[in-house]
Image (cartoon, rainbow, N blue to C red; front, side, top):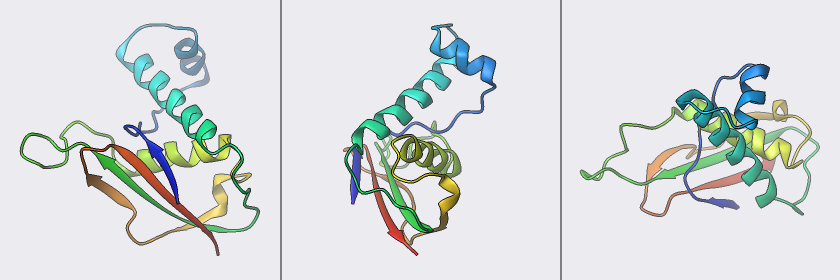
Length: 128
């Protein structure tokens, strides 16, 4: 199991120009979200340095843990599951755990968003 500590960042839609602007330090909410997404993907890549590279088709389980709100529920302001998964897959690909995220053809049981005060992402990958 791979554990990525900290709050997950959802994938953000971006054009090439927006990505360059975000990396260049342009300010604004959209650019801040893009920068956060790109930083998170790089963080994942550095977190998996030295792990075995997968070459075949894969199944991935990703459990995203976010801090609960005051009522103990999922926070209202959060990304959707698809965008968290996209960001995680891009980070794993950037870190060269596999060549292409198209290798992931199935999601394992338990993939989802959960609450816990210890924010993190837990990832399990199996060859199919």
